[in-house]
Image (cartoon, rainbow, N blue to C red; front, top):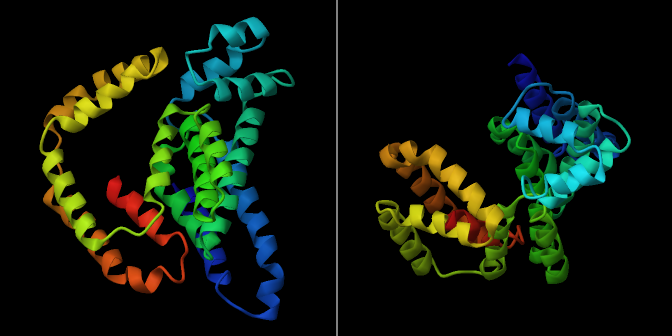
Length: 284
């Protein structure tokens, strides 16, 4: 656990340096990005038997050692993830090298996205690392997320073509990336009254079984989606039956919503993508 804290401390220090404008620090700021990149790639890439879905991912990497085995597991996982497994497997059977390759791809796209979306790239990188520690090992999801965020940065900057290209690419790594498609409709300013109605409606719907049925409907997309939907619903059936939004959880969400709603007129001129990201938070 100490290692995690040390990395967060280093990233926090670099995020402070990022906001110091002196000739000395300005010269080294770009180099500090390489430090963050290398540190995170090595930390994520050199892990062993850590994180979610460790065993199935190792199994897939070991088994995809030929063209025939590649097509044999097509449907077990998304095409894009199987493809990068197959490409690396052609050169080596060392799974650590694959994890390093995967980490390079993921953090490359993440940092590119963060640089485009915010002026506080190091701080955002630190927050992302701290928040997603529980998802370490979610290889497909995190790679799809990095591509999706990079695509979102293009949408905010007016390049819709690259947005659709990157979202389409992310679908080859995790089907849930289709949710990034809603940002096309959220890339605008929405009236405060409409946002309040959305939050109220979400709370009411959350008290019903409608979210369960909506998620179930994703199984109609194709056979793979149906298979994964059934697995997730079966494993979460007991939790879904007894789970409920706590009062503390509701207050926390309302506090975040209210704070940024009040401040958005001051933030929007300084942060081009604020309304888009804020709308996405409310939808989620």
